[in-house]
Length: 605
Image 1: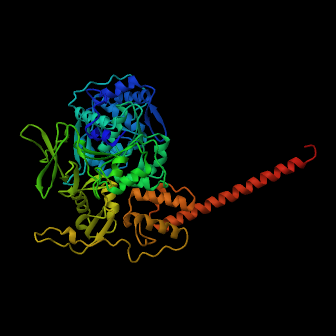
Image 2 (image 1 turned 180 degrees about the horizontal axis):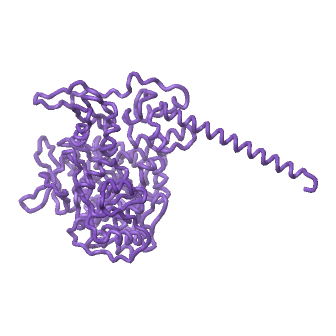
Image 3 (image 1 turned 180 degrees about the vertical axis):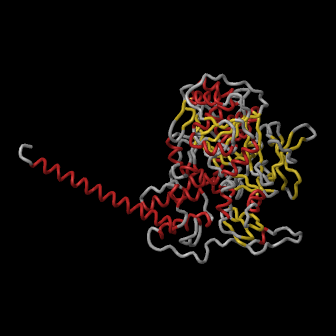
């Protein structure tokens, strides 16, 4: 395949035979009939064929029959896919509630969505009762002969919640017609078919997982969900290889951690398409692609929003990258608009303007009117993204940052105002401001700063919790009386009174933390997350510790012992216990061998 032959992919493949369907679940049941024995979902612990996934979906549908809005409180994996397809087959819209989210955040989402049924994993009964008291909590079991409900294509299919500037999550509602349009566009652009296996790495609370999951099971392919929060990144490459993933999709942050874990020259041989979205892609990402993926694969830099999913894409082959075609200077252009998604720049100054998406397939907000949505004079709906862009001479669009205070943290949309609202709700915080420093959130707090991160972690998702809390006596102001964010001090990373680590394995742990966090030193008593760490960096620490110490170190252990001192003490105790067990086992084995020798030397034996 030549570079020129790939050029049309951002507008779909004219030779690709598309399918038509009136609803998401309607298309799914067509695939079940066509490919009952093909793998549909390949999870960490089990693989479901289309027939088996269909059976579980029918059981869910029978259990929630009559419900209009079904919340889904199920762990990332095959049962989550079954719950989603079952809720849709019952004629309901679904609301994914990620069990890993803070309870307060889930309470807000459930309160806004007002579900009339909740599908749960058995271990989430108590949480479900707290989130939706008085609402039926369903644990589907067995099989059922449920007949899928026919729905209007313009009926809502799901509600996803994004960060809201008022401090309250905002629900994005998408219809079957629009979601099917997105999946068909994705199908044509990537030529998806029954032979594909698509990674599903993000939470189903994000549109990234919606696109990945449906693009797999509506085409007869297999979805490969991997719960990165539970299993970390260390085994991701092994998952991709073991299950023959052909389409890889993640944020650039996860992609970088994945490739950093690979040995030089190691290629992920089964992957034919790499799709990144949610953050800026840089030239170094393309170099990594060339080094670690097959020559015939294609790299896609995607841009979009929960309100429409992908709207712009830039498809690049190895040949194009090496020739410098469409790769930009430092930041890689996001590409050209997809069919059905017009893109304009409005309020342009010096060539830079706000990216406005015009489309018949835009979502809407749940029970909220928002001025970012509107209708042009020709009757086409538009959505003002708040992102800035610039058209390049070759017709590609270059992302230029945010026009408002919404930022992207590890691929997730974050309204700084929502984080500030959560800070303001804490009783010991007088005033607070949130800024981005080196790609991480930093909170500046007037008042008591101790325990702030822990308190926020109970109300906000992990990606919205600032990595550092900086106490201040007063805030610098602009001439108009607003906080001057640019004049806020740089955070002090390591407290001066934090002692240096002493002994082993404390020094080894500290050295690994310093390398992963990019710090000159770390203190023995400062928590990993207070040093700017996050879950992805924790995965890198896990891998390095296992390599250095030669033992398995579960992620749960790292979270339970967040300082160098506590982790070193735990690992030392664990190694001592293991050594004692080994001595005991060796002694027992020696005793058994001696008894066998004695038995063999007795008379008559």
